[in-house]
Image 1 (spheres, helix red, strand yellow):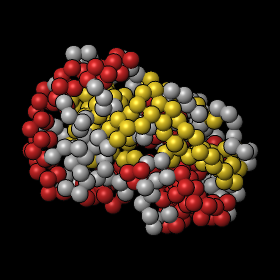
Image 2: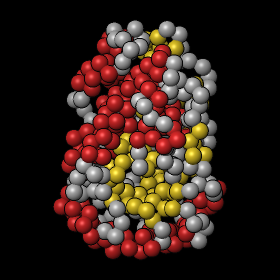
Image 3: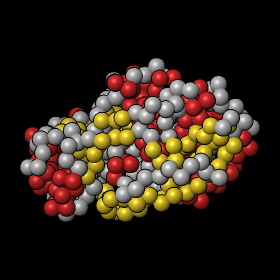
Length: 347
């Protein structure tokens, strides 16, 4: 039976990271450890005020389900435990963050007990993983250009917009690179603005627009879906499994976040459902350590797009695992998600 431990960390960022909703230079995160048979599985969930996920809310959720976790078996299959946890942690949206950390840890432990990487256990090949983008947060135009220059060599950049000067930002960044751009407005635009700016962004080499409108503006989203010159990818509109069907006809694809949906198990189902509905699939990250990024890497071969640059945005990391550099992911030759904490197992 697994033993549950957890510890919070504060991850320092290389730069102040700004999106349409706010700024931060440090990211609190919670690491969960499940141990059995001398093996340790790790999961992660970052705090997120937008979704009500705080360290106290996550630790309270973990303590509520501790008896279930420590009374379960994961060596042969984590699915029964995770199904029960999903039922227990479904009352409040923020509980999905704690569920995610447990899900990632259970999967990592399962893979380590099986002696194989997760993606191999799922019948996936790391050779099929798409290249990741690198994210440039909102800042002054000169500072955004400097961030791009600092991260030169990536094949794709996701540019956070919504703070004004959107077109001028893309025009200036385009002078610095021929790489593909993706833009993410984090709900900061209107339908009229999105439709108006989309052909200009297309002509500047932008691949798609992520979540231009607030999630509750479904009628406006339908209009943008039909009139935008660029594909529209859902993020804030696609949180839980049921949201995938709601996004059909409003978005050309969905960006699944593990912390929001509850981990790898629901994410795999969401990806399969989106594909069945003819939508593009993407998994995105928070600004998280290599614990969370290494879990995302296991899913990457299933995807059309992936955003797993979170650990690359940190000034220092707390773990090793999958390493994403200049868009490509180097998978460790280790079982599970390949995660090793820098300071050893939690005690």
